[in-house]
Length: 326
Image 1 (tube, rainbow, N blue to C red):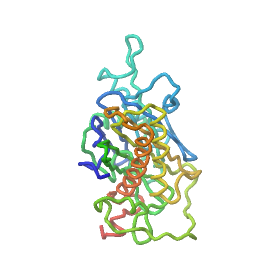
Image 2: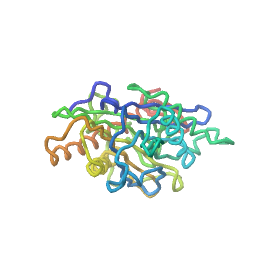
Image 3: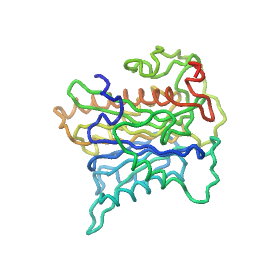
Image 4: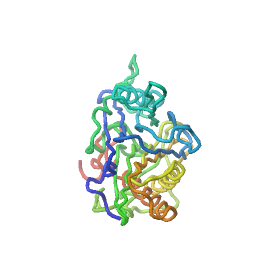
């Protein structure tokens, strides 16, 4: 297993990512767009999720593919980012065919960033426009750190951010992860060493080595319930059913637990979408599916660390400010 050429989720051929953010608002949105509809699934492990159209991602539902996935700031207001994306896709003639109408299928998830110092006194919800702008910006290369859905994100003691990573398995299958890190927990120790360091490739988040783990450490902070959430997408070019994609999303949560301590708390809405473009059939449905889950977890852990590593200062100091002198 090795990193993909961009070390981004867009190493999965046919996928593009777009970001949009408002500096005054200190929030933003990110869209994952497929060249064509793709299989998608979801798994939620946090206690305070905020979602749109996730029920239809169950394997027994009528619609088996989606047009895009959206990650957004803004708490419940941010769910409107997916409406902006759906409007844009409808204008492109994309969507699930119902008679002579096209209905874009755009599941989404949100994180809470309403108390990060930005101007939240809007009279009209700004997130629909942010979603539309993110769609229009979609491409193979995109910014990490203080960008898109991670623009105003935080962790327990550092600025959060948008992260991504990829890997290519020995079989040639590609796996990638995209994440907006807004966690109640910590992603590194007091020396700036990331909990995800055992899965780091090519010093992609500083190469500082393993974090020091204190078995007696207890979480601290004063966040109320609902003020945190890490939302992620893992993707592959493998051909998966919705049931298989769901298992990949479940396995990817291991990566979140490796990178954020603690994760999946009652006060986080931690969630992972899975996306599969279907370009590569699985040679071995059992072992290849297992390898995909492992790769998704490793990629997500790396993406979480990269999102924080590349973030700038916000309502909390950036990793680079605290540990690398800016």
